[in-house]
Length: 175
Length: 180
Image (cartoon, rainbow over all chains, first blue to last red; front, side, top):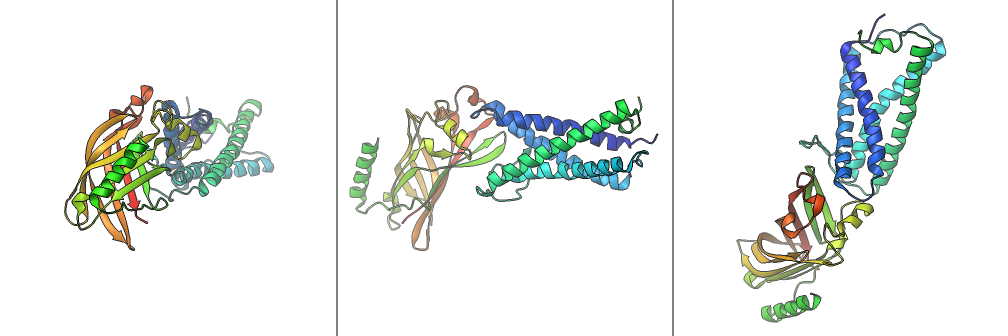
């Protein structure tokens, strides 16, 4: 069995942990009423996670270009097609979701200070008209991502536990 | 408070022998700049009045009074704006206004003034001095200045908000006042 490269695995699982954590943190933080120090902390952490996902996504694309993933395992054509579609959607979303959040926070006039240390460049001026629109875009891209990620996870589990093939194992280090 | 300001303004007007400048609320801004977990935030006060009595020929006779409605601070979200008026922050129910009343204005070179006066926020008054610039733009007089304050000296942010790693103690009040 040909596995993914170690850096590809690391990038995959780091991204997985971060987007799932950022997703639930996002749902939690918007539900906190008023302002509390906890809420402000959650917002900052959520943004730091988003920036990290974006950085990892960029590294990942570069790594993938230089280190092609293992060829698809044998299976029905529709499954290859579906897997390709889901993978393209995921690659699009690991950029689009953080980027939409980034534009949203800058439209709101709140810069991102990564890890509380580095102020990230402004992409747009504060814009009260664009702000609610970007909020919707960020929300719906996120919900789309939740659906696609769920499909991705369910498919991986189905291959592993029902088909008992190597699809998931290729993304796991040899123990 | 209002009466006091009116009386002092009246006194100023008589003393200086010139009417206080009418300020243009649409073009003037008063804002607070602070850092929240190192994130710079600029929030504008939606409601304020600024009365400046300034004679370019006799700058040392100038007077300035600024009154800000503390509950009008716009931090960007209606939900958060409500919090700002609460007891831990401005306690706007008890202290609806923050005021600055000048006691002395001295010329500090061309287009520059040094302003001294009493700043009162949340019932706490202190004497402060800050630089102010004056310029003429399209026939209007434009006054610009920034005064750094420590929010905790005025009890702004009580209880858990005393934590300066969340909201820094240093706050800069920026203003840009344009005459009509």
